[in-house]
Image 1 (tube, helix red, strand yellow):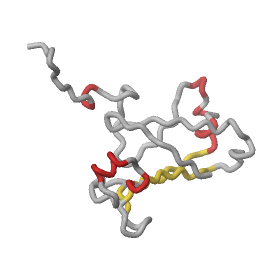
Image 2 (cartoon, rainbow, N blue to C red; image 1 turned 90 degrees about the vertical axis):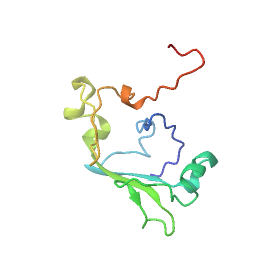
Image 3 (cartoon, rainbow, N blue to C red; image 1 turned 45 degrees about the vertical axis):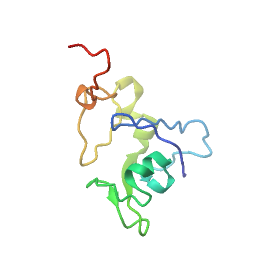
Length: 132
């Protein structure tokens, strides 16, 4: 299955939920293992993102997910994650009742107490009415 969608990024994070339970014929989840791929090309991004990273991704500097071989002449962000059927369907140790969320840890994963970011991620910009 191929999904193309916009992602809103704030404080270097994004959250996108994909409900695979809506159509059992499209997502039968019969296999035991799955591969989830993330591919981000600046050529498909809005102009203000292209201004930051350029049309061909010359501004991308990530050492973990930068890929220059998938699309010739273009630098893209690319990651693959292995999932199990139990993680996708929230069964077994990942069941909703256990409260254990399936979190896939990439090599640069940093544990966070809050899913919305920590205070270190927030940049404080003083305004006109800033306290002295």
